[in-house]
Image (cartoon, rainbow, N blue to C red; front, side, top):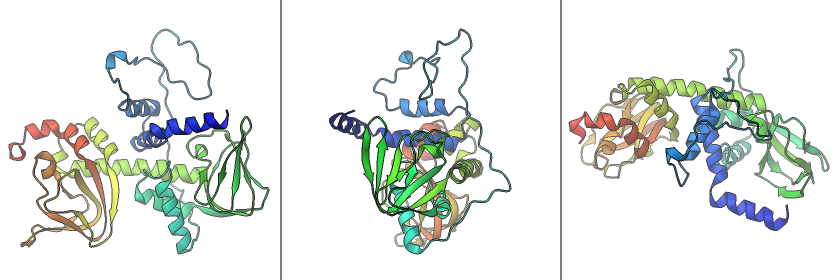
Length: 346
C-alpha cells in the first residue's frame, strides 16, 4: 500500500469516526458482560447505518472472525458465536507500582485521550494507572515483534520508536503519549507490527491479565452494582429485568470534586443521575438547601427529562462525588411507558 493509499485509508477512518465507535462498541459488550459480544457490537454499530430497515438485515448471517476464511454455513439452526465469561479470581489483587505525581498525571491524561481507554469509567482508569509498570529500552531494542504472541500494552513516555509492518515497511514514528499493543489487551492475537526503539526509551507497560481483570472484571462488578442502584430508585423499580440490564449498560460514570455544581437551576435538563458514592446538596436561589442531603443510591434530575421544564434546583457536590448518568434519549426510550402512567410529569 502506497503512501497516498495509506493517507486515503486514514482519512476514511477519521471521516466516519470508525476507531472511536468500534472502541465504544467493544467496551459496551464488555460492560454488559455479554455471552454474545459479536451480536452486541453488531447491534451497537447498526444504529449508524444509513439504512436500518430490518427487512434488509439477515439475522442469520454468521459472524466471521478477522483472519478466518469464509465457510459455507450448514443448514439448520445457526451456531452462536460466544465468548467465555471472564471470572475474577478471589485471590487476585490489582498490582500497584509506585509513581511520582508527574507520572500519575501523564498516565491519566494519556488514558483519557486513548481511543481504547477514554470511554472507561474514571475509577477504571485510576486502577489501570496504578497497574502500569515503568520499563526502559536501549536504542535498537525490539519492544514488540510482528507475529509474536501479544501479552503487553505499552504507553511511550520518552524517546522515539519506529513502527514497521512486514509488507509496508515503516508506517509511523511513535513519540511521547503514543500507545501500542492494544490488541493484546482484548484477545490473544499475534502482533500486527514490529516496534523498535530508535533511541533510549522509557515506557509504561500493562500486562494482559491486569487489564482484563481491572477492565472486564471490574466492569462486571460495576454492572451488578448499577443493577442494584436501579432497583433502589422508585422511578425505575418497575422496569423489566431486560430494560434494567439495558439501562445499566447505558450508565456513564462521572466524578465531581467538592463544591462543583453537577446541575444548575434554570439549565436545560439532558441527564438523569444516580449517586454512586459521595454526597450532594440541593439548593434554590433565595431559599438555600431545599431537601435533605443526597448520598449513594439517591437520584436527581428526572423531572426535567420527564417534562419540558428547566432544572428546578442546583445540585452541588459536598465532597468528592461519583455519579452514574444516563442521557435523555436512553432515559425517554426506557421510561416512556412509565411517563404515560405518571400524570404529574406530563
